Image (tube, rainbow, N blue to C red; front, side, top):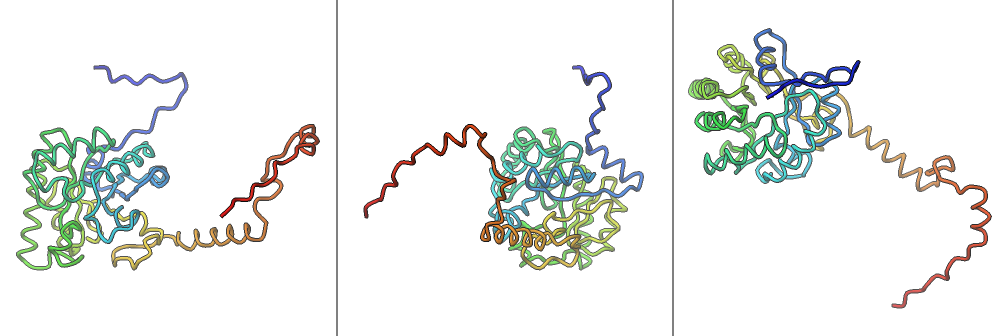
Length: 300
């Protein structure tokens, strides 16, 4: 098949799309990978235009967008819906979609079917699965689906962990996570998210891995970093984790604007005459002759 891209004379070539190979080259060259979550078209546009390398449609949308207590209630339909919206907003970033709880734990056949839907129907370039599921990664890779692994603090295991606790603090736990990272890489994962683990352990896994590691609460030695969009802008309405840095107070910004709007409407300052449409001069005189129908009084 032809891969020639036709363009009008003098038109600029489109910005190259970030791929799994792009991320790998960034690791090899020592250039940090930037990643953020996004859950809708506007935030996807903003993140993409900022030059972020990787965008994750995380099942964290259950908590920061849908108001669930944790990520467990999020469904495939919800993930597909939000991933489609994000995909429409991206031109450059590598798009990864979370596989929600229940979409890959029951059987590998279900996992492959659901992962293919993420790629085929929603436009994801890769899917992310939690835990050291190397055999599943191999199965998905064989089905031509790029997979991002996720080990350490895996939110879908919140009940098993007894809460959101830092993982990998004992010798056996460190050995297990290092082994899981190696197995995921050998199975074909294109990257691994390291969440909620000690910096020293994340640095060791990163050094031993030939594929990129993306940290969240794993210290500065990973190949890249990811945060939740809403954490950056104080839009979670809850205390943030230790590892999360707030870059702007979006909640205060929106509250101030909302207060102004409410007061302007209440005090008849919005809309102004300049913000209103007007009849042409000849139509104004015609309007004066229009009689309104008498108001009907509704009987109880």
